[in-house]
Image (cartoon, rainbow, N blue to C red; front, side, top):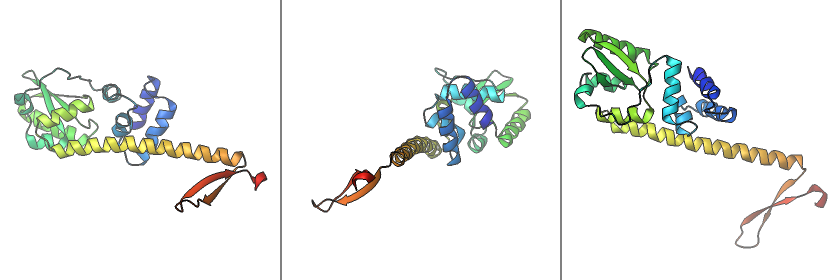
Length: 205
């Protein structure tokens, strides 16, 4: 699914080739696709959710301005909400709409299907923007620490991206220095024993 999502983000012009490479690099460092894409600010969480929904063949729902009641959230046992990070946001008497943190989680989908079947309801899972999912989980009383941990992971992804870009920039500078035949010489300053760096051309040495 990750590669399908990246390919669709690229085809829609939401990311370019450089961004895709950065995202893949972050994922090799242990970040999830969402952390690497949304956390590193390559794509908004709304656009990311829309693309994920398209890849999964699920409806995208924007809950902006929608007040999900405690009664609707309470239709699903808290243990299920907490275990599977899934929160109800709509119910019309026969169909319950549930937002999932990870719609690809087969175990979660099966558990939700079992619970709703027991109650005689139809199940409609949907993809909502990550920030709205966080808000639903908070409303449902799911541990704040879990949401905060996720946000710290996203901040870390941003830091990793900046660090990686700095490393790439440094590597490019070093390559240019070698190409130009410039050698680095480190000399000690007589002032307070500090170390200064000088670039000396081999022809002048």
